[in-house]
Length: 460
Image 1 (cartoon, rainbow, N blue to C red):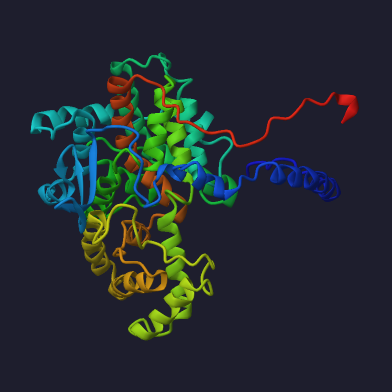
Image 2: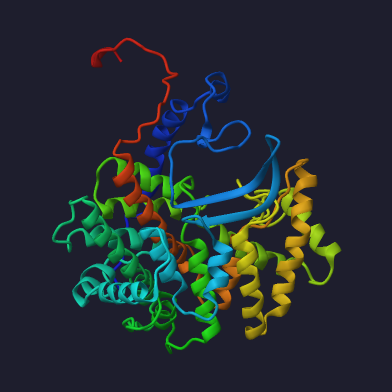
């Protein structure tokens, strides 16, 4: 077993807490800003206006997200659409049919701006395959040492460590950043899965096994191969994971982690620092952890709703959630609602279809029907509870955790899978920022404190 950090004695710990209490009180008293000042100075909190619309802070050609149509100057709610490089993601998924490398084609599209030909895809797959090996030294010296219970932190640490293994880490020329980006895309699945295995072995005393990725397999296939003890998976399992990666690959420049990519890139820093910052942003439960919240909510629902067929029972439970009387008492039905999408989230529509197919293969159709029933009830319930006129639809997180659970992916890897999927989008935006912007992002903050006289030390 890995040695744990030496802990201070209980007595010392209590003394430290006592000393910290004084400073905590001082901190809170001197960091509170009057909420009315945000209104007075028209501050766009969260970079959103009073109507919830995002403040325009940049331009992009990577992807587009739409949830409305303009009719005579008015915004009319419409079925959501997501475009990668101008191409509807629905068409991308439908066009894949039985092909295995949907995520790889999407990577190519996002980074290079067009769908690959057969020859281009073949060359690209060979390149990614050559780049994916982490090397035994890195696995031993970095991944296996200092393991983390939170795999996102382990991924950040490993990504930063790759800087040391790069012969030219500081070069931010387009050529070098492209090389670094593709290497990170290829290596991130191994980093995530190996970090999980290391965590299970050193912190949970489970058997350690490390399986190398196989050339000729898709990234989705290799994730399942490396993750599972027997290395086996069905064709449908690999297809569903591949589609999930495609749907999470990119979502406009305004989401928190992609905006982080732009901000950090604009400073001129290296690719490893930029990627680590984006992973850190995605780790936050307000961004990347929603699918786990959905799963935990459904676990609680199953324990409290006896008849999964009863709309009355389900509605009563959801009402308790909204009243802060059930689950985590936050008043939120997780997986419902989106900042842009109104009538539907195209990613959810697509993933739901594959979730149903996978549920049939796994003998979990009753669980799928429960999700479907909750989805059909929750939107209207939220609108009535909050007196909203805007439609509330399910978002992609509603089914993604369910899909990952059916695939046998542990909860510790839910958000890391999201990071693996989003790496191509981050890379495309980093390259776009370097090529097109070339100006540091520096928003304004207004000082609302008070100027005071300096008091000499002996007089305080």
